[in-house]
Amino acid sequence: MRARGARGPVASVVLVLTLGQLAACTSGDGSPEPRRSESSPAPSEATGDRAELDAVLEHWRTVAPHYALQVPGVILLVSQGDQTRALALGNARISPERPMRTDDRFGIANVTNTMVAVVVLQLEAEGDLTLGDTVEQWLPGMLSFGADVTIEDLLDHRSGIWDVTARRNYDWGTDLTDRRLQELLDHPPTGPADAVTRYTNPGYWLLGKIVERATGQRLATVLHDRVFVPAGMNDSVLSADLDREPRLVRGYDENGNDITLGDYTGTWATAGVVTTAADIARFFGALHGALLSDASVDDMTTARGSLPTGHEPGYGLGVMLLGRDRSIPFGHEGVVDGYHTLAFHNPELDRTVVVFTNTSSDAGAEAAVSLLDAISYE
Image (cartoon, rainbow, N blue to C red; front, side, top):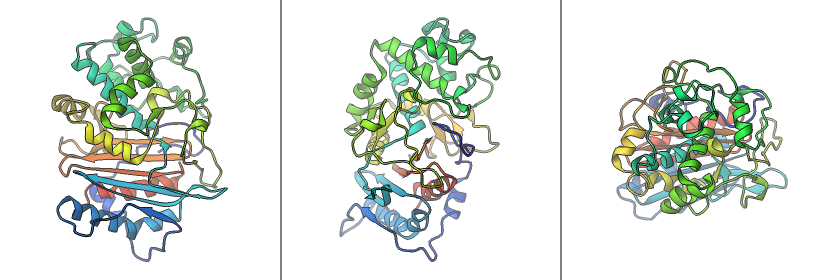
């Protein structure tokens, strides 16, 4: 988990819990009434997917208020088939107070990785690049050991690139020009490529640069054209300035201080997408067919290793895996100043769950993980 006081998008790896442990974390006994809530309507006659999602929504209504008292606000969404249920609790802004809405927008931090990975796999399928291409081939001189690092190593965080963003108070407003990125990458490798899975934000900066070289377009345009439009994600952008984003939830620390980043330039390809819970669900719903072939999704969700906790989650190509089998849930976690997002898809149930809380505190992490049990709730 991110150390207290650290800033910026990270993989906090709170998902070392198994699904069974996730369910055990949740208890609704003695839960108080929510301060404020907004939920999507449930149909009067529920069968199949409707009945299962109604059960999830009722489960959340029982347990979520307990966690909502510990964080400024929460957005919960579950979709299955053509059915969706959503619940919002607490506040999107503390002062002046504004209640959280299910269609509010927020920065999803490292969930961005999955969307960038989709673009890379599209380009591979079209023959514009291969996963075995090296960084040196696409970005000559950018990385001193780039001849040893492949695109696949960047996607699965096995590149050996030191994560400069782990430095305390790293400036997420950094403009990632080629020259500046080369300076930030001027550090010996943490180890040989394709040896250890170790989360590193700069790897996705390099992927962003490679995508721009391969397409001749800016990454924001590529994501819009190749991911957001075909998936029907009308509320999604790759943002550089949170202050200009409409319907934006404010983010807070453990003391209730507003720590929402303004300049979002430096998050870019690793964490720069701003969206809604519903758009995230649309993204996972569109993975098979609209965005990727079944073969590409299988490749994406095949574990290359596990994040260095000694437990799960495993890691594929831009996705965390809650286990090793392809039928288990996959998705990503994202943490940035004031925001914590968990977005996972369960292929066995065809269910997507999005959990968002507008705090990057320990309480927010506990709430997010506990409420994710809906990924397998029946």
